[in-house]
Structures are given as C-alpha cells and as structure tokens.
Image 1 (cartoon, rainbow, N blue to C red):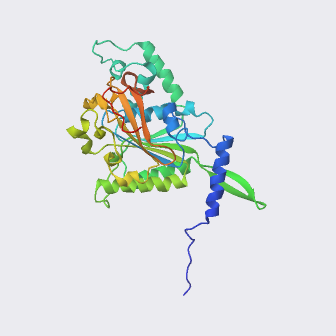
Image 2 (tube, helix red, strand yellow):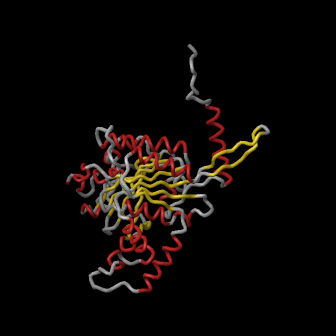
Length: 344
C-alpha cells in the first residue's frame, strides 16, 4: 500500500529571516506603513499606527468611549492614510446602522445626537443648513470602501465572511519566475472591526461563551497570518471591576488589569495589543490609582496599554467629546499632593 505524504507543515527559518529583512527594508523605504490613527499618543504607543497582520483588543466599561474610539479610527482613516490601498469591513452587531451614521454627523457638525434628531431640550428643530452639511458629508464619505455586516454571526460565519471579502477584493499580478509567467494574488490591506465580541453567536458545538471567544481569537490569528488585516475587536470587562473597593480613590484597583478583560486568555493570548479604556468619573473616582492623578473632567479617559507585543505598556490620557462624538488627546493630569512616589 502506497503511503501518501502530505505537504510538511514546517519551513526553514531562513524564510522568516528573508521575510523580516524584506519588512525592515519596506519600512525603511516607506513602502510598508502602519495604519495611522488620529492621535499622536496612540501612534507613539504602537508602531506609528496599527500594523497589518495584527489583532488589537479594546476592553472597557459601558460608556467608556471605546465605540467612539473605533468609529473615529475608521472615520478619519482614509484621510490619514492617503495612498494606502485600503478597505474597511465592520461587524456592527450592536448598533443600528442609522444610529452609527447620525453619530458620525454629530462629529462633523459639533451638534449633539438629540439636536440632529430635533429632540433637544429646547425643542428646536434642526436647520436646513446642517442637514445640507450632513448630506454633503454623506456623499463624500460614501466614496470610501467601507462595508458593514450587521446581522449576528457565529465564529464560523465571521471567518467565512472575511475570507469571502478578502478573496472578492483581491487582484492578480503576473510576475516572471525563472522565465515563466506566474500569477500572484494580491490582497488589499483591510481594517476589520468588531463592535462587541460578546455578541458573536455561540455555535451549537460550543459549550460556553468563553469557548466562543477562544474560537474567535483562533480564527483572527489564522486570518491575520493569511491576509493583510488589522483587526480591532471591542469587548467588555468582567464584573470584578464594579466592586466598590476597586473604585475607592487612589487604589491600584482603579486601573484596568489584564484579568479584567472579559473572556480571559481566550482572546488575550491572541491579541498583539490590548487596551483597557476607563472613564474614572463614571465611578466617582477623583484621584486615580496609586499615582493619584487628579480627575477634574468627567469625560477624562484613561487608556491602559496592557499588552503591546511590539511596543511598551503604560498609560495615556484622552478626553471624550461626547457632544460631537469624538475623542481628543489631553495632557497627563496633575497628581494630588498626597501622592507619595513608590520609586526614586
């Protein structure tokens, strides 16, 4: 009986040296670039933006601004990354599509969602000039190659959808190899966002939501190795963060920790970057963490860089501008006079 030998799963590490050197050269010459975000602090904490073939996991409490964060990354991405052959695929499982676009109109008009819907407290009706501005923005923004999936999906459906998307928008390039023309498939750089990992449907074969999230992480890792995708996944935090003792002024428990990310190792081990977004004023915290940062603005956001595979961990401060549905950088707050350095 003949033995069928399948293709080996291993490759020589020489190929990885070659790939690493090619990547370095591409970065040096500017032929390979990261996906820049609207914030220098964010770009500095990453590889001057989000690299493709990576997974970024963002966890936060409700109303912490994590959805604003992703919306702005997508909304401003095409202007900040000119010349990049780019597409965006958004899995928008939580928010109604119309609501998402009204929030976008809020960002470009500096009017609140209620004002745009003629439902503000003063009962004023939105003016035609504002509607015309939104109309012009919609025409311009609709030109960008952004596609949305708003039906609930399982991990299997999530994976199949992305494969179909990448293959549909791929192109072919003919190269001459050893005197023979060879067709090489080229995939477009794609930002894939998921607005809430917990809303991924549990498959019949999965015994728990934790298993679903572990499978999600595995699927994203498999896909990022095959395609030039920058994944941005949003998730919630464990209930542990709601304990009163974690919200007392000046406690280490104020900080978002790796163990706070919902789903635990199921997602964490697959992520290249993990960011915990906190809004201290929502928990009436006035001095944040053992460093006693003074929280004077109720819209102060703290980004905890919990994991950065190719960068450094740390903390940075931003401000949510909910009235215009955007996020802005802010200076690091001052520290309370009661702060006692633990390090020299």
